[in-house]
Length: 207
Length: 207
Image (tube, rainbow over all chains, first blue to last red; front, side):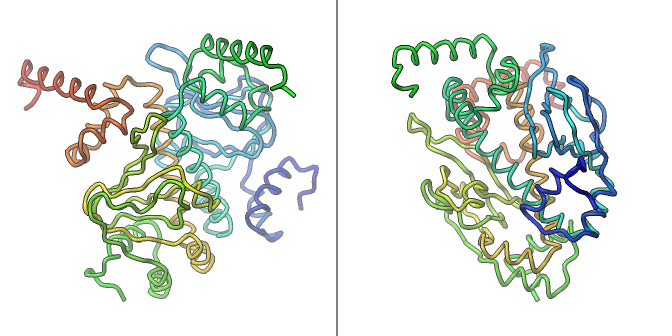
């Protein structure tokens, strides 16, 4: 059985928060997983290729992006430790993807092949529950994201995001954060300069 | 057992596309459902209330919206026949919602109470699979929506949506469609006038 030194230990710990797998069920899961160690900028998925697996971030950070009509990279999603990521349209229809999935920093990722996943979930129904709860969490996040995109200015959106995920804001390159939030790096610089200026004028607010 | 005259017949038919329930499993599901017949503009969920159920549209159309800082209604989601809708953040955390869910037209909706759903799914694991696949479909749609929001102009987005869902575009009030697509009713009128003008200049394209 896997011990703490297993590369999959974070995934098993994450699953244990939601369902209690027996040793046999854990073994059935581990038999279907692959682990992938990626250098920075390595791609797990490229545009026009079929997404064949879901990715669980054991360590590191992934980004999902597409190339706009103007040839620019537009980031749509990030995933850090304990998040699943895939192009779920390409995955469920097995048709070519419009997205790239790339490592933002050196990363270790568990890969669950789509065909194997469907068979595994038939054999281990507790994993249906786990993945249903994961998909429900992603759906909840997507609904709130549309609320913030439609209901907040770019500046409000940045401050909301920076308050909710302070470590993440420090971790990813600022031009990637700007792309994800839907504005230019120049606009992000202006927001940050304004925030720094306000903090200087009201030093007590920083205490 | 339910027959075609049961109000839940469309839901059972929808579930049967994904999993094969026994008669006992169908009965267990039906025992937990409520049916709600709504006049136009009736609300299933209001802001600051907790979302206590998921809604499956048997007949009609629902919209989910929030009130912006400026006091305007901003539509984030629609659901027509065979779609599930809920505020999944409020539902899964049982905290007050930021959204309203309202009938756009006279509608009949199946309600699955959140607490009952969790217990039901433990008893009928096939429904874990059904809801996992539903959530995966919603996640796929949300990813593509972010791609269109970030990658297309308002005009491209309208034409893409009108091509993908021609009946739906005829069905909902145009000011609601404009809100959902993220622009003003005036902008939508301009796009439609331009499209009509182009169709007149190139009549062969309409054949």
